[in-house]
Image (tube, rainbow, N blue to C red; front, top):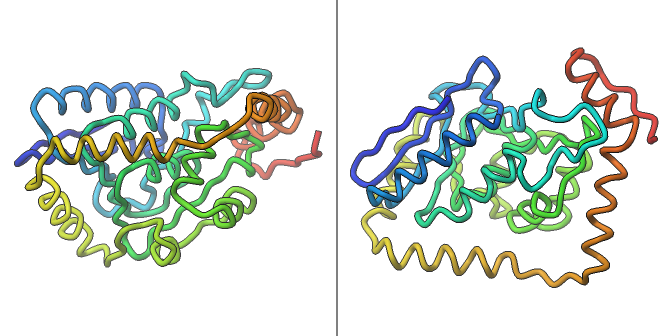
Length: 257
């Protein structure tokens, strides 16, 4: 599910599950974590996370087949998406998301968790939990808020519409947008500049920035309310309907209950 290459202290992880549109499943995430651990051992200084060249879908997001039917928290601490984001954020070297094609659902969060994003001009990002009546947990929402301003995060999460890469770049959420033909050259030029710098300094700064980005004050009461609000969604009839509709390839009929 992942292709791995290491050249001159730069590792490339290529999503290779095209039959499922690179949907993020537990097996793929475990392979990702194993690869990052091996990168630590050999002193990788920068990682490029990408899909195959010319792909139409960078990743379709969280694999819907691994979401529970109903009544269980679909985005718990141990779910694959949470693990993937934590692996990206805590890996000591910078990870660059090289985006070609469309990015859907939880894959948006995975891309936003990366340290830098370089995207093809025609790439799009769509946060789609509202299309399936799937709730987001606190960690997922904070990933969006750390990447985007509040109004854009709301637009993405409430409308589930694809947002063009150029618009996200103009708002500082994406670092660079380029023609698809120049995407690899632009991305790896940045990776080489990173790899040429002091890895210990970069590692320390990345961890400092991660801690500072997560320093949001919240009362215990507010945290408990946020957790409880999520249960309202995944215990609902609409949650079961959203999962059924996706599997049956039809438009869901939500009733708000």
